Length: 303
Image 1 (cartoon, rainbow, N blue to C red):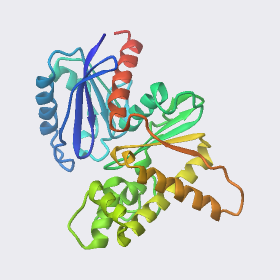
Image 2: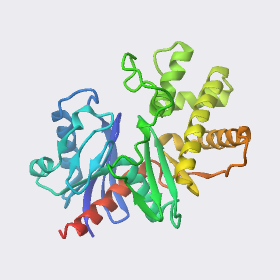
Image 3: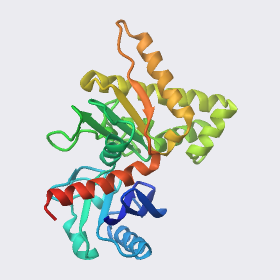
């Protein structure tokens, strides 16, 4: 059985573990080095520090944001991590002295759900993960679909409005800016006139019936429902799995389901209600998918 160091790199935290088959060991997380920096060294040092804790491994499996060419081991973009744009991952292999395989984080989540999770047996499905941004993965005819330029599933790049470069927000008008977990918390903090809040505080206020939180949460769920409708119009999935830490709270999935039903009720024609469920593995999905991806790529490379 292959023992790997597995990393799920996000905009705020690097989750990690040693994995051998389905056995997850030594699981933990550390803060992600400043995403707005162009200096990659602190990020690589963070990985080295974790590797030292995990003990002997045969390779490194990475789930990361951005556009990833898995065959070339090349990061075209790094999502929210500016230091991971235009990166040749083979340089990491030389540094760590281990084989490295990288895949987009939402695709890792999708692979985990397709193989052993809530997309098993689904011919056409979608995974949407909510966190710093919004990740997406698409299954068409029972297979992971990446598109002609590796952009299929780049949900953070979907837009509501024409982008304005003059805005103080990095991607003003994007779905992610409005409806990711980070985006929702930012909007709530602005609405309440406070410096910041997090997901736990948001749901605590929601459970208390706070009017400002309730209205903003409804607006966010409506925004998600609109894009689910747009996804349906192009892919017509039978099931959509919602992931990320926020998906653990039942209020989130119920809010999205309710918004989806309300949206359909306003249409002038009958439109199918897609099945909306949570991801089976929640925050572990990216780790499990990254491990599976490593094994698949090593077999593909004949290694």
